[in-house]
Image 1 (cartoon, rainbow, N blue to C red):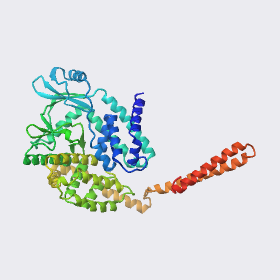
Image 2 (image 1 turned 90 degrees about the vertical axis):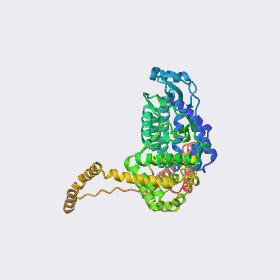
Image 3 (image 1 turned 90 degrees about the horizontal axis):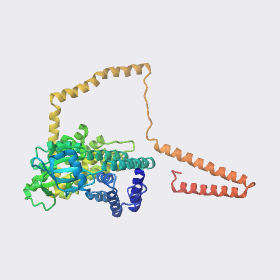
Length: 525
């Protein structure tokens, strides 16, 4: 009953916000030019539908390969601010989970978002803190919405080739992983401490300390940091602002390329300028994680971008991606050669936020190359990081910083791989395959000699032939139905004129419909 009720709510919002038009503009249900009005209605619908759909919009804002520019721009305005839930509920959770450890709790929240809200607090030992408390019933609401989204994705992929190409199922999986992580404050506490360790070398970048043991799945106590939101009127001396911008951007490059674990949501609401002129990073519910191969490839990719090497950029992107026989790799390389130089050696103020990585994603989709979801999240993270860096220092050159950090990573990576433990581990894993190589070559030679070697061939790229045969069969079947109706109607004319007339009308209507379809779409029925 709850699922049916929620489905009706979603359908009502979709109808009121004219989301069918939005689907046409996105290419999922037809084709129509993207408009600002459609993008605004889409954003408002997501905000109205609540937490799950708000997070979906935030994920989609990192996918310029899926959405037009006007939609990406509008979704970047999504605001995760909602009315606070009653203070009595906050107090109940804090008392149940932390007892008398929290002696004072401010009834007015510092922030109220769709998943949790934050209150200033005073601990029994005199320390200032903030308490983050999860909204009541938010887990049940998210479970319900995720089930609806999953059903919609399965329905779309069965009936739309475009939906399948857009990898909606992978997007749905990514949405669920992110939401589950943000709902569990035990995981957020671990994420906070992990990022704090990575930023130890940057004295001007700080992370609120997790105050243990006051951590549960639904509530979290953190050190309170006093400061204000970062904006263009920060009031810092130019030299200080430039240093902060450089350290901030370097830190995110290093998180992506060296650690493989990075704060994936560094928007302005999560970055605060402290009273002593440092930058505090907040809210670590969402972390991006990369395996070693992807991390190293992304590092090489950033270095190739910094050096304007289109051939290397293309090769690295292809190694990350899924390609098929329909992928146009030569066209992809040619387009990269044409577009890549426009981003080289330009100041940050001359590059729209995330434009280079967004263009790479669009080019890949255009030429049939599927990038992994991790690339989109890295692109969004670096886009947000350079936006904050622009606020502090518009003259910062991110290309030079990327080059320096990526080069340092390569040196560190080479050094670690030459360590005896790493080197012998790699050699040991390769020796097994090398030792079996002579025996396998001998086996192949023996089978060739005896004529028992079998080679399996799997045909690919037969979709067009299959489509043509299916269309031909459908049209022949429809023609037989029309002929059968005509003959049976003619025979029935001697028995019942009414039945015969109905048969003639049906056969005529079906024949005209077939003729219209043939003239309109020669390859389909």
